[in-house]
Amino acid sequence: MILTVTLNAALDVTYHVPRLRPRASHRVSGVCERPGGKGVNVARVLAALGHEVVATGFLGGPVGETVRQGLAGSAVADGFVPCAGTTRRTLAVVDEADGDTTQFNEAGPVISPAEWAAFQVRYADLVHEARAVALCGSLPPGLPVGAYAALVRTARAAGTPVLLDTSGEALRRGVAARPDLIKPNAAELAELTGSREPLPATRDARRRGAHAVVTSLGPAGLLAVTGQGTWGAAPPAPLSGNPTGAGDSAVAGLLSALAEDLDWPARLTRATALSAATVRAPTAGEFDRAVYEELLATVKVTAGQPVG
Amino acid sequence: MILTVTLNAALDVTYHVPRLRPRASHRVSGVCERPGGKGVNVARVLAALGHEVVATGFLGGPVGETVRQGLAGSAVADGFVPCAGTTRRTLAVVDEADGDTTQFNEAGPVISPAEWAAFQVRYADLVHEARAVALCGSLPPGLPVGAYAALVRTARAAGTPVLLDTSGEALRRGVAARPDLIKPNAAELAELTGSREPLPATRDARRRGAHAVVTSLGPAGLLAVTGQGTWGAAPPAPLSGNPTGAGDSAVAGLLSALAEDLDWPARLTRATALSAATVRAPTAGEFDRAVYEELLATVKVTAGQPVG
Image (cartoon, rainbow over all chains, first blue to last red; front, side):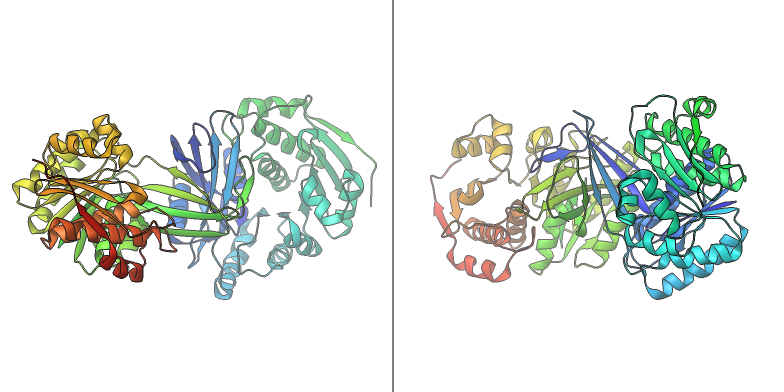
């Protein structure tokens, strides 16, 4: 199986309103809820690709219970451990007049040292059974900033390939623990390296400890700097749509191909096709399977200057 | 005991954000949750006044469970009946830069005919034990528009004084069933009668069936047209503050005094003092007890032209 870790899982709530007006009272015309947080989104895409997948992290309180119920009705196995605090909600308010979204993100439960210790025991068991693991998203309050570094070391000690997808100080500390792969976007990469030049910054990120770095450049596709070489990957033509979840789909594609031990061009093709098929899907965070299948044959992978 | 009915109960959620900006992503700096819906708010004020109080209506799903947990930790007894749908949330987003609030209200669960029948059985039992009952707020989807009229008739058959506080067609239909008291605000009264002149409109509302009508006029206080006479009641000076919950506090004051069989000037004094003390409280929907005690001695009640 493939394991995804979402330490700050969420219940993703979407409200539709006819028109968002600050200071007004709005009747919500539609409410959608589903399990969320980056690792849960990655797990959902992996399950849709046919992988056996376990999602772990913390869930607590009545909102956590709603997330568990949502997972129980899905193909993602529930490997979450309980916490005393309440799982956060994220709220997306969609203005139906112009389609724009306004986002509100709760902070999440405070995790105690005992809960963190209990999680690490569970994680060590799961990571031994996993063919690959993705560590995704922000840290909930209470966890040490080096939390991901600890989880990277446990995975590497178990011989399980580990992908880290986070930002800020958690990324900086996690990279130093030498994960197999990180997947920053341009903003996360700039924060990590201080550079906005994609190729030098991606190389810099690799020098900080990651065995490979795949930078997502939005519509321009992916840039990979690895021990085996440097590649760019992009769809044959720019695609318009909703980019929500495109990064999570790229992680799912990379992890899926990593678990199957495919080579880098095949990994990048799968990640690019999934990411673009997510942009094209009518529902945010889902992917259009027909677009995905078509792009698998048409994504362009270009070998660049080898490094390292 | 005093009974309050909230057919469309809610979990009231409040988010604090540094600045609300449409299309932006917001980190929520504070989340508060508490049981809500007008009848629940009225019950909370009645309990704070020392009354034994039971709140009933429908609760369902994980959000309903959170409301039940909130009631379990309060002085309001939980008389709610279950429903298969999920209790609604109301979300107030407070912009900390200017203090303004943007409100999002979910619609609420669809109530089935069988659930409505089960509720009416429970209500008939409760209303027999009650010294007074308040029917408060909007109807959830699925209920007949004459739902309040049925509940008014049951209360009157039991000899229990009944106050109706709703709006629109539910108010129009409910008034015709001859409740002891309705408490419209100026907008609800105008919708019911077509008139924006407070005194003629309040008299018109009484002719439609209510034994007494108390119109809340915001900072100008209350106007009562009853079989015993007409009165105005107002605080000695205008008060600034947050009007959220002031109407619910007025209902609690009227109901409390009705249950104690006080005369109209005493009822109006209590309702005006509670309402103004709610405007003055630092937390929306709560009342400032010192302000309330002081206003009990200083609210001005003026007798007007007797009617009927």
